[in-house]
Each structure stands twice: as structure tokens, then as C-alpha cells.
Length: 88
Image 1 (spheres, rainbow, N blue to C red):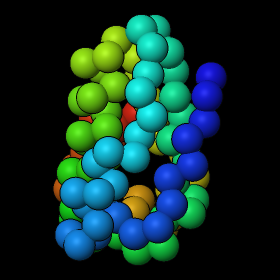
Image 2: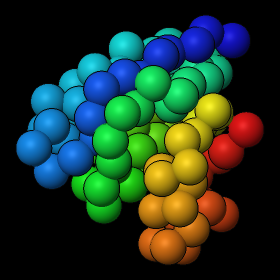
Image 3: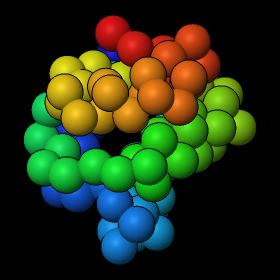
Image 4: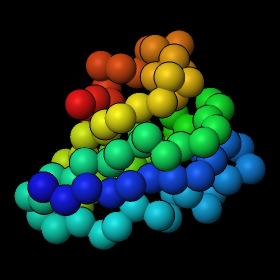
């Protein structure tokens, strides 16, 4: 399993740029996305995570998200997507 370290802000101002930061994945690959270095998050962060998950699945790969910051974990609960996002 490879690990991708997400970093910086996941906010409305940065969401478009963050959409393209996830590496290209191979069929059957599992990627752990470590979110411990996310310095700020708003509702756009949830959209970015869902986009990354969708793109990984389109490539035949799977993601899991780990080391969520407290703020990001709260947003995921608030929007009710904790059952959709594979959290580690």
C-alpha cells in the first residue's frame, strides 16, 4: 500500500488546485491518504475527498483516509459521509 501525504488547506480557495494533487493509481492499487497535515478545512474539503475517492475508483483503485484532523473529522460527521468515505 502506498501512502499519499495531503497537506495545506482544503478550503474553497484551494479546492480546485487540490483536486489534481492525488497521484495516478494503477488497477487494484490501494492508496492511503494521510490527512494529518491539512492545516485548514471547510465544506469544500468533503467535496475534495469524495472527488479523490471517485477518481480512484474510476482507475480501478481504492483509497482509505487516515489521520484526520479534528476539524475535518467533524465536517465528515456533519455532512453524514462517514459511511461513504473509507476511514482508517
